[in-house]
Image (cartoon, rainbow, N blue to C red; front, side):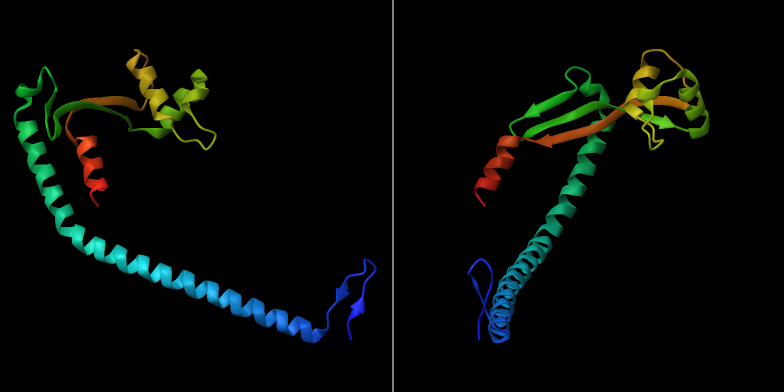
Length: 168
């Protein structure tokens, strides 16, 4: 027999609770089945796409290495402009600069001694951009140097990539 509560709602019986629990189980399992089927479909589609793109990725890697070798062997052709533009995209040289912290202890000591708080995160990791900026402005920091040189670079026209995506 149902029980009345103070706000005049009727509280069901244990049998009502068992029925509701059964409905909750049914809906939960139905939902999980739908989600699992979707995930399996996604996994099958992803695996099929991975299989289809693997040889393309390998060819792109090979072509990129080949293009980079040609660019680096012909640096004199990329003085001005450093990048050549074609209807397919652009390729050439760009300057890549990265900080080489070859003696972390010496660099940390120097940075702390000089109060370069902006060059250190509280996790005691280097803020390489800040250190590099200081070095490039003429300061010296023990244990650090900036290496700069040419690397090969290329990119496909964004419009062509977008067109390919739209044709999918």
